[in-house]
Length: 164
Image (cartoon, rainbow, N blue to C red; front, top):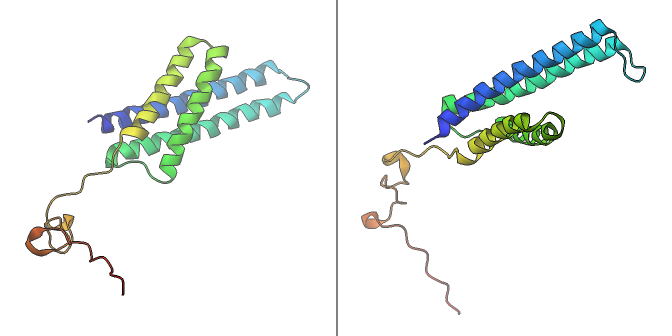
């Protein structure tokens, strides 16, 4: 099965993306600060700090998504709770980023975003629940997978009520 490798690859991709987003926004903040750029009269220092903080927050988000995928790979269980929500939101974010990347950057960036989107969706859709072990713990009181009826047969339903 492809469950664990997909989760591991997705975790590495999301961690790399987190570092890339943080580095890109930090660089853009430095450029704005050193060039003393302003947009519509905004303070350049505020723009620089906002770019850096926004990049770090977005990088933290991708790192948490990567941690969720890494936990899926290590534990071998489907994502649940906050991890599942993070991975679903990462799929939505990559879909939106892919749509914007096509128009603003080009088909190469779009292909990268769609590849990550595909990995997230593949992880969410193909990771099944762990299989239950066979044996006494698997069944009911009979220990053989049945509910304890005679001869290993399942319990029959109660008789239908009769009219008085």
